[in-house]
Image (cartoon, rainbow, N blue to C red; front, side, top):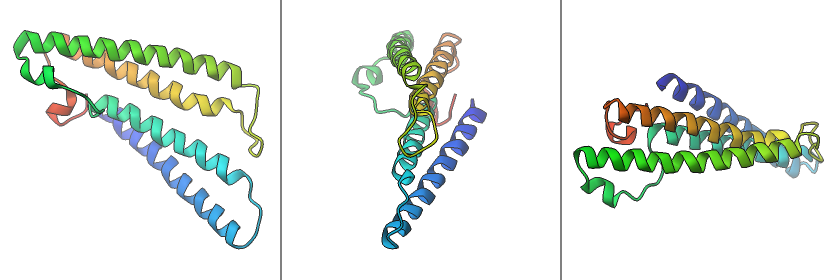
Amino acid sequence: MKKANKLLYAIGSAFFVLMLLIMVVQIVARSTKISVSWTEEAGRLCFMYVVFLGAAIAANNGSHLAIDTVLVKATGAGRKIFEIGINLVCLSVQIVFLMGSLAMLRVSVGKSYATLPVSMGWKYAAPLISFGLSAVFTVFHIFRLLLGRGGTAGEEGEAL
């Protein structure tokens, strides 16, 4: 899973650098009064991939925002049961969002952006990829808990 994180970091970083370059083009074009209409949509699309890939990385690391008042007081088998329950709830939410993203992707595949020669499906592919990866990471985390290989990845300081 560490290799998956490194790959996601690399892809997310590439989208971030691309987004920055697009924003520089937009700023230069504005100051020289040159019309470059595609930069706003392209920058937004890159931003979406940065955000959603970052969410998948956070799911793998166990570093999403969490309220853990009950979890930190639990010990032993009780803690394990709570962690598995929390992960099952997260997994069900991820699956709901995954299905919603898939439905939106299907609807938007035939449409294209006004200023980009790209299908609008790419916009809905970002959450689909993110929730799909997050669900896979959550399943691995549940198996890790069931096999007794530790608590949350965030506590251990390493990715799954």
